[in-house]
Length: 378
Image (cartoon, rainbow, N blue to C red):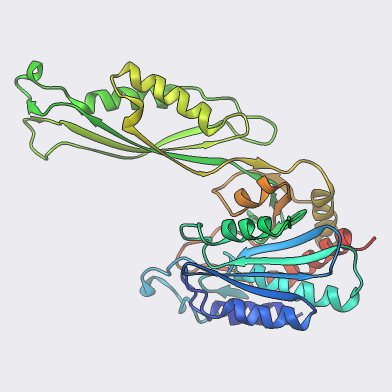
């Protein structure tokens, strides 16, 4: 099965750094059209998106992913050109997007071609949702396509996302949910002054540090069977003029929560604002941004099909996890879809020398086809 690997290499050779698709979706769209899909290319802002459907009725099973990649960084840090899609003598496929996630997209396309050729009258509808904006702001990508689908009265029932979920070996882990991500920027205003006359000043940093200490010490929850405990991290802290004898009049912090379904953006905000007011920091001093709410797919047809597909192809069973960062699943799951992420090993994602075993592209394609067989054959 060389076809999945060759398609992955062809996609990697296209330098599709966010939001540039570099022609990846046009190539994929042509192949899907030949496989009987109705293909629509949707451009929102500077972002290219693809929606393709085969079948005219029944539940929608969707492959979802992204064709954009993060910048390669300094080229001299790479053993091979990041867009050469080199396969070395040890069998490693190198390139930006090898793991995240052009190999998955190639595996999905080839699995679909084989499945449609063998089962042209399969049950339900099979779809693709691809974007060139997953690694960027994620405003004009998957989120915009879902709004477009919603306006047409369409929704996804089962969604398999090709994010690199595996840890040490292919398909040893599948993501059945993700933690929410809430960001806040805090700006505390006081009164600048001389350190020798603190009674004539109001140290903004002292009040900010008091709030940060309370948030770090707070026990948000203990997690549950699907999620670890909610975590809080301070990512940036700024204050002062650089002089040792000046009390800062302004202090800033950037913070983040990764939280489970035991919390909400509203519950985290309420606790934070209460602590803030205890330190003389009003609610309007905190600017909030929700990157994504948490979601979890419970035991059902998609999880069962994924387990059975991996077992049939590899003889193993993937562990279910909600770890890691966010994905576009945060936009798809709230529409009511069951969502699973299954893809290559993630040990080198966003690094120089991003790579995966070349043979894993074909193996992953076999797994995807096996999952389709369990979802779309009555």
